[in-house]
Structures are given as C-alpha cells and as structure tokens.
Length: 247
Image 1: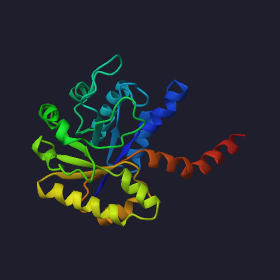
Image 2: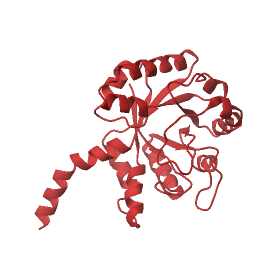
Image 3: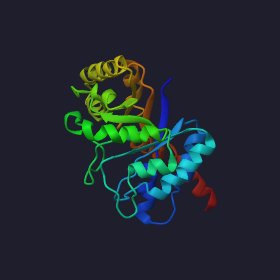
C-alpha cells in the first residue's frame, strides 16, 4: 500500500498572510490524521514564508502522540539564520521518522529539481550519516531522468523521492505516456539497488491513480498544494451553509 503524507505548508502560508494563528496548522494536521492520512510533511524554509521552526516542534509532538510518521523536508546546505536553526538542527531537536533532503534555494518559489549528484554527493554523505545517527530515515529528492540516480544509495540514503512535477505537466497536457515510462524506469533502477521510492510534487486526485498504476511499489506520496486546493472546493458548500445558519 502507498502511504499518504499530507504537506501542511499551504495552511501556514494562509496563516502568515494575515498574521496571528488562523488557520491553525496543528488543527489542520489533526483533521488530516482524523481522516486517515498516514503522516504529516512540512518543508520549513529559512525565510519562514510558511512553516516555522515553532510549527515543526508542535507538529512533531502531535505526530509522536498519534503514532504516525513525521517527515521534514529541506535543504541541508542552507545555513542557520535568525528564526531558522537549520535543517539538521531541527531534525536533531524533533527526531522525525523521515528527513527528505531537497536542493531548493532561498529564491525558489517551490522545489523544482532534484540533486545534482556529480556536484553534491561528497557534501551529502556526512549529512546523511548524521541524520541516520539521529534515527531518521533519509530520502533524497531526485529527478526521474538523473543518470546518476544510483549515487543516492552510495551516499547512504534509504529512499529517493521522485520529483513528479514533469509528470503532472505531461498529464495535464494529455500526454503522460513518455513520462510514466521514465518514472517507472527510475523506480525500478532505485529498487534494484535497495532504495525505497517515494514521490511528490503536483500530484493530485486527477493524476495520482494513473501514476501509481504505472510506477511500481511507490511507498509514499507527499501531497500538499493540490490537496489543500481541492479541500477549498470540496469543503466550501458546507462552510457557506454554516454561515447561512448563523445569519
């Protein structure tokens, strides 16, 4: 079975746009878990544009109490700064079940590419070892077409997370076949050397079933933007009726 980890970053984006505590990230995560989600994902960034270090600590306590997976994503190379202690420091303080390393820069709107192993492998190796010493399972964000995908195992990772943005774009254009073949091949390459396979980015209810039917043995999908966007529509009618009842 493929597990669902819900990324609650977008709840924090909405909260931060106004200030204060609403919508409450912790309450949103509880609702996801009550509905059956297998875990919670966060991707704190140094600029604190959405999930903050304080959120990470609160969600760590929640997921630990509920006995579900907590997955922290982030750039292991980003230096600490005020309000952001750094990815490894956050993981050391909260001991998530999984740490997903992503090579996103400060200026990126969202994660849009995997690691360049020719450039990054040497730096990744001790960081992966440090995270595993904390008891974290380590996953590396990878492009499906990366010719050096196998290096993920050499630096000590347990899993890769396939960056599925290109597949989602191809699916939306009505031409998913080539991308599905590429992602299936990448999954098999990883699995052949003992790596588990996760997937995430722009997966949605519209494209997820076809992806999982074609790509073998995906262990976990991390979904945030599409899931929260769909929740706005699916929950809107009930919310409007609630306001009408009050009026």
